[in-house]
Image: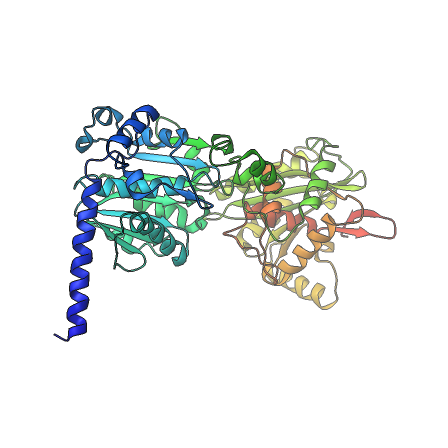
Length: 523
């Protein structure tokens, strides 16, 4: 063996012996001693070797060490049976609740707490030796690397441990800890003996990944009975965390904790820091646990606020019979919701009368609902003359539903005629709504124009669009809308994207006559 290689092997063996020796300092030690008087006494008696967190070093923020706070005791007590801890009988720690859901304010140090708790569980005894622990992060390998790096740093400082594992893996006292990005969980599906699953910022996973990660995690309950911990700052309505929050207590498998910014004032936050944070439009989501989604790049907050303020000046249940109306429909039947928006042009403005999404609806139920909407605007029968005042714009990707609607309103369903009219209007720059009540709209060619038109109406020099505050899904979709230059919405990032598509479709039937500063329906 060459000298250099022999020397390297010896250094690795020495590092391993040192690491093993230093890990012995953590055996049978409590995570933290929550009684401050008792903690001080034991710290003095043991020369600072009183508990896991003092041995490895306290958490640090802005170069300042912090103790564990009372809200972290709530987290600890939610998982750990403290009766044994009170008798200093740490070898027989058991769990009260193995499944924990935590909705938290940013900056409370909750992620750091659970990383340290995992480190303690791996080193306090040999219970997890030979087992696996998993950390699931957002869809970015850099986030997975960062969390493992943070956990390694806990042991590298005062203890001087050296780890030669790859960037997303840490072997600690015989327990393998691995971090998985949420978009690459194939390996996570095939583990033999996972005992600890920590899902960090799960509400920010892509929509398509949220249910998948939850399913894979919970399927291990019957196999290895791990404890599953979900932690996140809130993101968008209808996401993973709001779904779990709304589950009935009788069926939800998680103990649920909510920790807003007030838990950290005078501890991890100063009052000045919170006052500064309040100036951000994201404060309610980041600190006050509101499901508002990430602020989008499409519509200005002030324009949305102006539309909502104007929306307080009308009653959305008051239908003006003689007013022109437009119904926008974005059908969805499986993984996509069915978006419905109804507007009327009245009082010199565009008033939203209905804005909603329907998850996994039945085909006939939605056909009936559309007809009920139209009938409700006038009488209980379909009046052909009255239909002149109503236009229905539908995503053209749903020809079957368009055919059904045309049958119900008494229009021809011959697609040869429909296609001819579409082509004729395109060639002569005419409005297709002149020739039909149910108007197909191709998002592939119209998405950008509809997005620009929606922005123009929202940003008009005087308030035109009125959105009653009760239409929270539409308001949230506008606030969170993320779009590309081609007008395509980012469906993963935009909350309630289907109701926003329906809104764009409805507004397609509205034009502005700038000369008279009035709005009217296309004719």
